[in-house]
Image 1 (cartoon, rainbow, N blue to C red):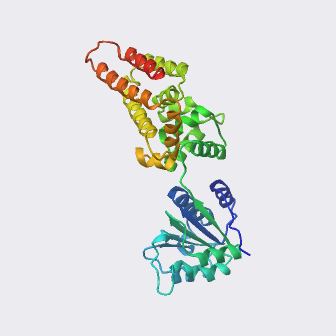
Image 2 (cartoon, rainbow, N blue to C red):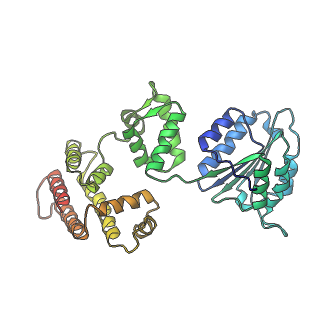
Length: 348
């Protein structure tokens, strides 16, 4: 009977390692390199002191690693330490040997009976390990764990990640603060976690708020063009005009030319989506040139609010507003023009 692979999250595995509960073998694999780099370094830092590393840390790199040498190192006992740590980085580059589909197959026999004092960490970036015999032996022996490091997606997945990480460092974060970080940092996980760590140290009451973010990261807690775009996508007239009023009161940080440019890009992509043959999220992603399925779904949602005729009309209004805001054919204030534009969009 096949042995089901254990499913473990990044947060669970991190806590386990920090608590000193080590597995004999870790396979860290997948597209998101941040998690792989973080976990392998956390294992080293937690299992060994600086003084212990000279004799008990063996590092190998896939393009030059000899798997037999790695296994030999795994079978050695630690010196003046409870653990020996053996790390194989960039395992996806390990060359294949004659008679093996993948040289990682050689790890199968070691996985069946690993040395209890050794912690073997195999980092395979960009894909899953292709060695079925090794993974099967690892599952059967229950000597280790396979962690799939998946790319986080924009939208709800990213917001859940931000909330979860904030909670893991002992903080609460409200919805607006979460959206601010998601919109302005995106899926750069290394930067995102670094900023959250900084905010956690500055949050005296354990609450990460929009004001704390604005003060220490430079992201405005107030209205921005992303929120204007969303309000128009939902035909939320009240919020759209409230945002433009805010822009008018804060012209230095909210020039109308930037708003018009962003809206032109957004509605152009909505028009492409409305006329596309393949309206699946994947088809729209390819059509408009985005890697964000969340953004593709946003364009699809907007097509339910605006038909093709309305979208063509809106594109014309955006072009006209851009021209008039530059003083061609009009001397109106830029925000008066923007308000007129928003009215036309909402009534298209």
